[in-house]
Amino acid sequence: MRVVVANAQTPFVRGGAEMLADSLVAALAEAGHEAELVTMPFKWYPAERIPEAMLAARLMEVGEWAGGSIDRLIALKFPAYLMRHPDKVLWLLHQYRGAYDLWGSEIGDLFNVPDGRPIRDSIRLADDTVIPEARAVFTISRNVSDRLLRYNNIKSRPLYHPPPNAGAFRQEVAEDFLLCPGRINPSKRQDLVVEALLLCREKVRVVFTGAVDAAEYADGLRRRCATTGLGDRVRWSGSVDEDAKISLYARCLGVLVPPVDEDYGYVTLEAMLSAKPVITLSDSGGPLDFVLDNETGFICPPNPSAVARAMDRLWQERARAKALGEAGYARYRELGLNWQDVIQELLG
Image (cartoon, rainbow, N blue to C red; front, side):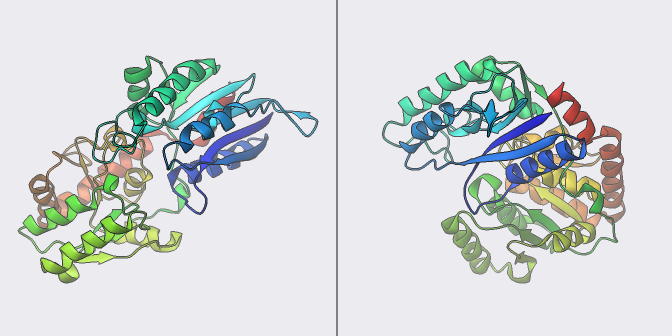
């Protein structure tokens, strides 16, 4: 088959969505299909630009290109999934969350802007109208499916996949640090981890990795660490290359995954492949599909004192931490995540 994978992208920004799109194209090619990634730049600010992007996507018909027919469109992300094709399948990473679960929240972007409500309503109307046009609707997690059903009354099926470079992760002897990967952004809640560190009984150390995409937030975190004397108990490593990332996973004592209502999150799966226990939160969304409380890690209430207790437990109980991590690795293997099944569903 000739397959187009459609995604939206912020130029010069690369995260889980971009890695998933690249992995999907590679898996399609490996399965013997002609596959091409088509991305559209998406700027969501000022908010008035969002309807323009929606219109641009909707005007794009991708059933035929350069004299050849496109057999299947696999659309991933807003607003790219508004593109038209007679044989379209959605594998939904997430909708425009500012119009849904983040409406009214501190990290939502539409709630407090002029004309935010009519823009929100136009996004919801477009989703209600266009998503059911697809011949099949999949999502990347139960969390995304739940949102789609709750807000749009559209049923879908989660379709799980392995993280990029899954075969490269390894296990090594744990050293004296916890790892907290992820873009430095309020939605990832690194601030909660910093506040938890201040409450720990043990001298827990945390290494943070990830690019800064909220400079003011990142500066505030650094100031908080400096003024409270955390000193060498915190390391901000920024973006790291793949080899360094895999090494940190292999050598850490455990992995912190504290985001707000994550869609999927490769971090949890990468930790499991590295046989490391995961500390996540009861409102973190996607990680809850994989972490089993007190079996492969800890699921905590979203407050610093609970996270501090979990961090102290891993620090104090090294044999327990190792056993939790090994159970997480075994659980990953039991899940049987693979691209062959994903391709079969998306093209079936």
